[in-house]
Length: 175
Image (cartoon, rainbow, N blue to C red):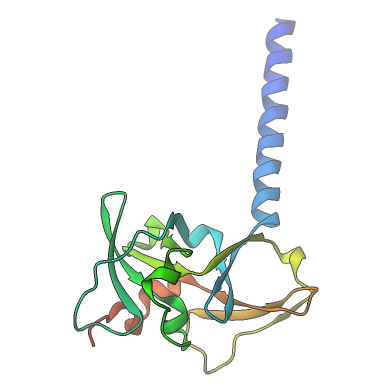
């Protein structure tokens, strides 16, 4: 009986530690930091899907300039969006330069078969990685959240992928 009690106590301690570790991990890493064109973006981890190397895309005629085409990602056709161009930057560079880039799909729960063209994946960031925070501009699209400033004074724009997936401009790829 004593062994049963000890085992039960051990299981309870392990469950408590696992719960604490999960809570700490969520608190420690809230965003995926990326570069897209001239932009430093923070993408909420719970809204981000998988990362893929640049697979090339099949262009789709008569679409917005920021819509690059479709790509086969694990057997699923996904629309590929140049997020920097969508945000107002110059158009993407030629295909050769895109070979160094990657794609980030939106989380499956967002129910949007889309992937964002990312120039560079910087890493995971939590709130402790920033020294200042500003609210979103009043005239900004709903998918642009606040701006965080890191210790090197670099400014990082929060990009709400859930709001992006529901934005009428994002959903209307037709030119």
